[in-house]
Structures are given as C-alpha cells and as structure tokens.
Image (tube, rainbow, N blue to C red; front, side, top):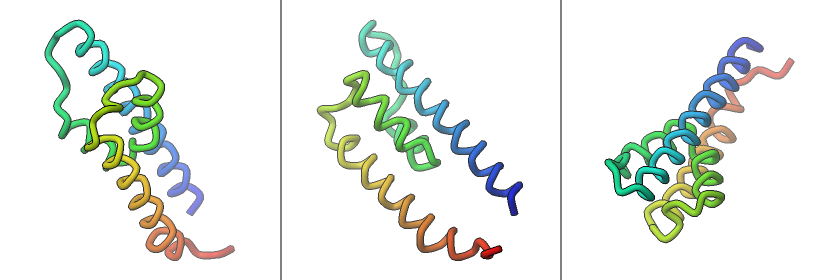
Length: 96
C-alpha cells in the first residue's frame, strides 16, 4: 500500500511540474505574441491533477486571471478532486 501512495505522490509531483512549466511557457508566448497553448490543454492538465500548481502559478504570474473559465473552473476542479479523494480514494485505503 505504501508503494501506491508513493506512486500517487510521484504522479502529482510530475503533473504539477508539467502544469507549472506549461503555464509559464504559455505566459511567455502571450507576452511575445507567439503561438499559444490551447485553453483546453491547460484545463486538461488541471483535471489530470495539476490544478493546484496551475492555479498558484497563474496567480503568481498574473496569467489568465481575467478569464472566468480559469478563475472559477480550476477551483471547481480542485474541489472535485478533493471530494474524489475524501469520498472515493480514502475509504479504499485499509487502516493499519
């Protein structure tokens, strides 16, 4: 069971790093008028577990903070992910 938890933490770390890098790349592309990362791709990365990292990065970089889709959508994704953990995943973990 400990291996599953370690893999889960590793996955969240990896997807969070992807979320941060992707957000920063999109911010720089926006500043330079270059080709951008699609909004759908950013939201998919959030849904796959990078929501917290992406939201924090967007706030810190002031990127997409005027877009309701992100300022409401990503917190909703975070709430849904927390609910999934609390009501689905945690009950499946046996108490030792």
